[in-house]
Image: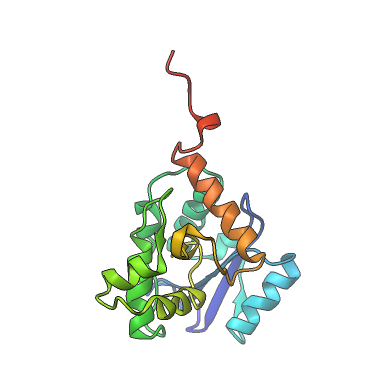
Length: 193
């Protein structure tokens, strides 16, 4: 495999997603993409993000990519309530600016079924007045849903802005899937008797 960018497209409960990596993938994923309007739009989006990238079939992807794909499929199918499964996916984030990298690292630590506000993340970074900067960093997240920016909400729990295709509705769908996986929806809980 050459040192260029490669990507795979795969199915999930939310629709087709894509994962990208450089060379043999030893540095980790350099990007992921939530569903677009259709497969053609998703592929076009990946080629805009990574000009000259080559699409490979999943069977030609490195093992790390297959593991990432399986973890994402499990998350979006509501089959995992453990965020550590996504934390195990290595990310090639060297091109991400330092502040954004810090925001994304904190975001990765938010457990499935939980949320934080932009202000809470700013405070955790030691920058209490940087909620808008945190929001911009989340908006530039190149690794959704591996870096679960959908778990970051506006003040008062408002599901504000989401730059992925489908916008806030996609954010709500992701949060609902995760709430079910975490057993937070009453109708999904098992009877005690």
